[in-house]
Image 1 (cartoon, helix red, strand yellow):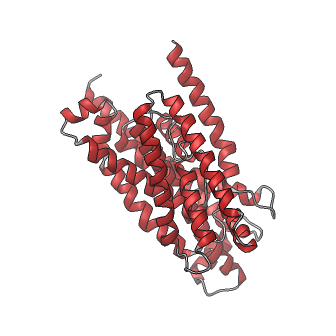
Image 2: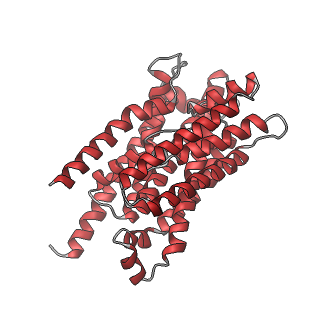
Image 3: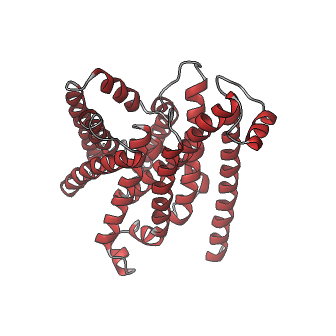
Length: 344
């Protein structure tokens, strides 16, 4: 079998997988529009969309609650998946991810402190929260990178990332002791992780940040593929390693920061979805994995959000709870399989 046949097979499988994921995403979005505390038939949804947002109560539910929420879940789910893949490429380890390495906890810490100490004096827009989360992500990423220079064992580095996440959570808890009751309620609701209560401004902000950042990640596919074979090989292929590594970290931090700022901490998506995507594609080529991972993450989070708001309705689960239920077993299976392959 020649290289042209292998490439053709890979592209053909990519087209099939992305086509199925896109169809599944459309189906999940359609179900989200119909299902909820107020159930609507598909015909009624189509009629309300045709009439526009200036219709009765059902139209308000559709245009102001369900549509922004499901689109935000899709965009942020895709962004978190791409962020996880970038970190896995950077550390050359499939278990790395924003949540596992404590990067999401760092973003949560800074956003929490901003919400506690500045919410009363400054209007906090979605963009301002993303900026705060980005700062927290970069701080923890710098800490993890510092340890990565001293620790070559990836398992130990992941443990360090988890411990750093606990430290960030402890700092956040200390800050909470100085917060007002209203700030504590807001922070607790946000820190549980949810796509609820978000309007079109959040959707626009998420799209303006995550879509260009994901495109930027895809444009780095070629050097990413070379970097996966080692820094020496990447340099021999003309890749400037230091600027490339910096770009990976900045893009990954920006994507995970946007998710944390707008939806709170969402666990295991950044680790499990890239693994699921590579398994579906039977390929690790970044040019194929990145767009497919974005779609797969969008499907994953839209479905998880549907489960979170309907399974125990009217009580709503946090999105992090549902993503953990489905994402954690995938990570466990991946670690066992990796351990087994290393033992052979």
